[in-house]
Image (cartoon, rainbow, N blue to C red; front, side, top):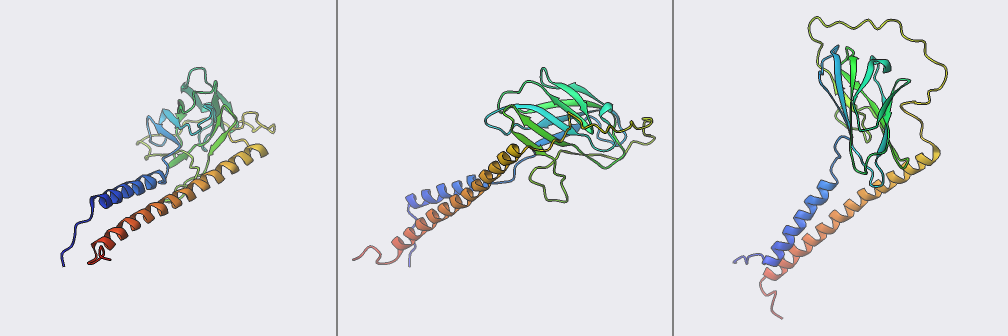
Length: 243
């Protein structure tokens, strides 16, 4: 029995459906890092190191107006100096970290700022928990510490360090200052207000709904493919066109 070629219309439908599935899956794939940190010298105990942070803008309604960085253990707020930031932005040391901000940037503009650290600690990695505040009050908290191969939903930026250079020694920073009992007005990781928690909860539900939409879209494409193949198979059967 000879096999009739698949009609061109069916082939085109299958091609379009296949491309649609690829596009849907690409959109549904894992997102890239939201805040990244790099170092001019990524060795433990390195001195006068420039750390550069790139914070991605993810709001469609407002630009980023402020960043709050929690410094990892071994880097004191007074050991940090601002090197580069958006025009008009200033750095303010706080308890356990620092705040940098100013006039809100244009919507969709990423924030790039650099600081100089007196010396990096002798550890394998550094975690910089980051809180982004937009001009309309929206807050994104990138504070979850990655564990193993699985990346958390809101990962904090992590800087992996190489072993210290031979002969490197820690700088004697002197006695640690007595911690203040007064709450800091520039706390680098503030608690969200009830209104902000409700906003984040609504946004999360919206994102979850988007994931369900992806599943529905894929299912619809599969139905189109199945219908096209079924039509072609029915037409190629012997006697399919006879009454």
